[in-house]
Image (tube, rainbow over all chains, first blue to last red; front, side, top):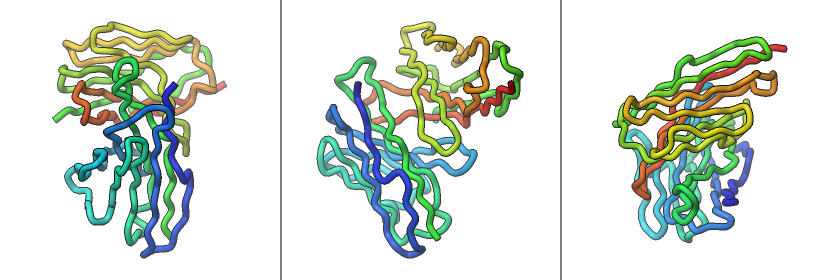
Length: 117
Length: 113
């Protein structure tokens, strides 16, 4: 079945540095991918919608200059957390919609744990 | 704006009990509804996907129902086991290609042996 791969699964970075997280659809093309953030014991909150070949659409309250999203191909979207701070420490997870699949299903990556020290 | 609510927020039961988790959503114009399981520190595992035209889906000891008109879904877990302990998330989806799933806050289930 369709698989979405996310990398890295865990990353620790120093405050002020940037971190890139990759989200790949492995056996289907995804014109749209979604990025979520989840703080401890909270639900998944949509950060932005990544559109292949165009600018991402950010949810209210999400800084687009801090969370850079690039969706350069039909199988890859990247989220870069720039100038990371400890409060950016969170679980980041991506998803992709398989338009050709059964039921227009959305598949999720494994998630990435970011710790900023 | 679509809002998804899950009740209860937490649930503790002894092994063997049957239980029901509830999910409600404010906008009934959904395309599908999906139940996920999330273990501590882990990602999401899709459990059941119900299309808007369906009333229920079953997988093993799990049964999910959907009442689109009333904006409700339930996840029924039969004969609960300690391995069922996790957070269960309900999410609604829409038909438009550019729209993401909207999640509830989840129900954290603890099954004691």
